[in-house]
Length: 315
Image (cartoon, rainbow, N blue to C red; front, side, top):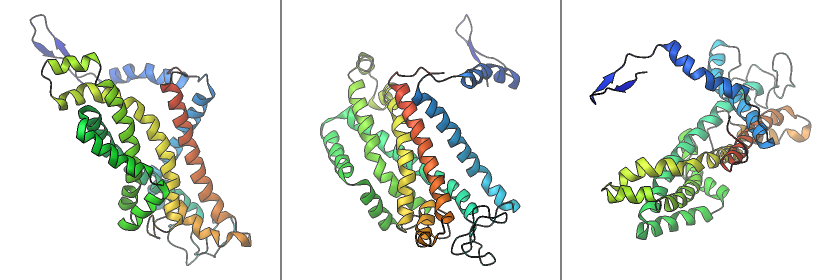
């Protein structure tokens, strides 16, 4: 990290890099404030719980491949040597499914798969929806009418039906599942950003920049983006929770990921036939993992919504 200082003669002077200890000392007060923060409202408390739960899922997704390589977790696709539909035991903590595969290993691996698809899908939706919304809101006219008509048409379709159709057309695969979910969420980011842009572009600082000869790209990048992006995180967390369920729905219908890839929706579909016979563990653990992740993301979204609306002060 370098400091840029301006001398008395107007010449920029380069200061020496800050040592790591100095950087840590600068960041420590912020970390202490966050750690000592005590939320006052219920939504903020739930958001904090959701954050820690999400952090656990992220850590599981990051370190589970290492656990598989070290042999601490069973291979997700090996099952010939295991008993079929075995109840939870010391050898298989969550039991085995009808193929003899370890339910615990597949549930843990499914967390990483779900987070990968969700992050990729929402990133693609942001990359497409935010720029289109800014272009539509800033320029208006025919461009705005065409984009609004297109996005409203997509937005009016049932989201599950749209995701199923896109997944069927694209086929199975991680990237294909992410692309199918991306199409569902692009109109939401477009609508939010377009409305914010249309409102902000009438502000005096935008008119001043235009009068000074600033181009549209410069204005959108320097002035509009930072003002319209504030409402996106709330929509992002809500869509993240919804996309986990959507991915599970695609997997339940056999349209999400290949059978060799552990995915919670596909696990629930496989467990459905054995559930009436009293084999509950093949459905409980994948369903519980999906439910907790969706709940944590929903808590974070509600907390962000309360914070943006001013119901909760920042830490």
